[in-house]
Length: 92
Image (cartoon, rainbow, N blue to C red; front, side, top):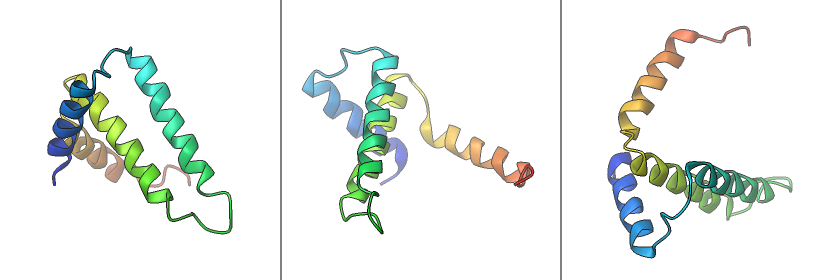
């Protein structure tokens, strides 16, 4: 499944749930909370089996926010990757 299809499907599901009743800042805070949950799955020697699920939650929340804001996620990801490619290591 392509990222824009994922974004559209996630947006439609969130809309059906009635959860598009927040601000962009609140949506970003929810993304941050998912990052925190992913961090919790990495507290041991290696990430837990649930780590992948938490990463999926992050991607789904980002995809929903992008779709909600009319952002073509595939296009902006491709453009950002192209910028990163020419940046090199930037001193790293």
